[in-house]
Length: 498
Ligand code: FES
Image (cartoon, rainbow, N blue to C red; front, side, top):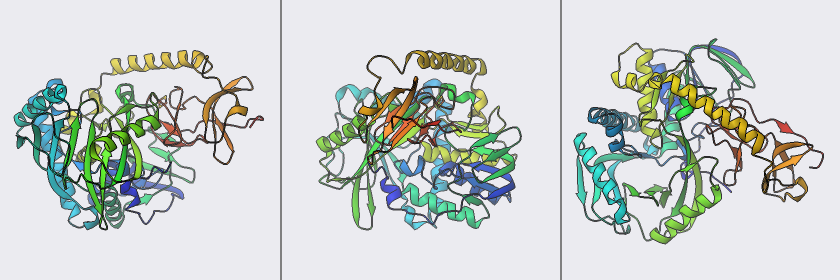
């Protein structure tokens, strides 16, 4: 299945050369999403020598698979932050996210393809039982100083809500991939050395050295802008990993115009419009699913069925999904962690704005400027004892599942019965393998043991990947890393029965 997002399909880029040879610099940024590229640009503006390494292409991670929505609230609710922390922190969140949106708007003045538009953000319940959460959010946003209102109708043929619609004025949306491509070009013009197809295979945080297949970078500082930071970090023990599935349809009867529409409840949908070269698209994103514990194809089909049932769109033209990491207390993790590297993670599905906040915060910290909010977001707020315990528990689970999990009744398959396009955990030559037979018949067999901390990978039928449920590492059928904290590929196996 083609899983190119509407953003990536409509904003191709020029490409940047792979890293070749050995380099040294002031700051190495790992990751070419909105966090990494913005950080690199800001640090170049401080006169620093910056190298940016991206494993795939600029925006090929989460940024190019996002919604393109920018808002001061958070997807898990400002009321949750107010109750985890207090109302003053909720107000800080709104202020910092608002400043990040202003930054993006200012940058977009020289990037017309980014299609930045100020718009209204709507939250509403489809069913009456979900209405109390809308009212709770209304109170939390009002207490945080936001201009909110309750209205009673939705525009453009959207199905009627079950109660008042919470409307937040002066939010925004843009074309995230076009923005990122434009920002990367500005970073390159400012002297940042950008490299695509340059996956970090080894990272020595103490020596501040990263190694790819074709070169090495030694830096005074390293920023891991890879969502879950590469390697083993304590924050990973408390960041559940989720995937959301999205479709872009040809616009049909429903066309609410500019605006962010969150249909809240168990059957949640995020809805927006996008226009490119005169073609209008209805972009719909469904609810979150824990990575490695759901059927990816069923999840995608469920979003499509919901959209067809309630929005009656035209035909689907793009399908994609994206991964996100939640923090344990609603705030992101931004700053230097115990590895000595800067990290930026725990953004949930709010990463376009949090990524910009993180870039501004890391640049400020490196410049020696005090920033109380970023200090509050420090990865160090994570309690090490709690983290260590969680890691131990997770490792215990890993060992248990390695011993018991794969060859239990009902999971065992035989290679000979694996049809083109099928995947399975198979037993061969006395071992378990994660196997997939390509449509042309070629067999790919890899170790099912994630190289990060040893959990078992699960098949993702939409993305054709092996996904790890523990901390979100994802691997291609040949074992190479797609994303997540793992550095090493799954071990490839050659099987005689193939
Ligand atoms: Fe951590 Fe797989 S064990 S991502």
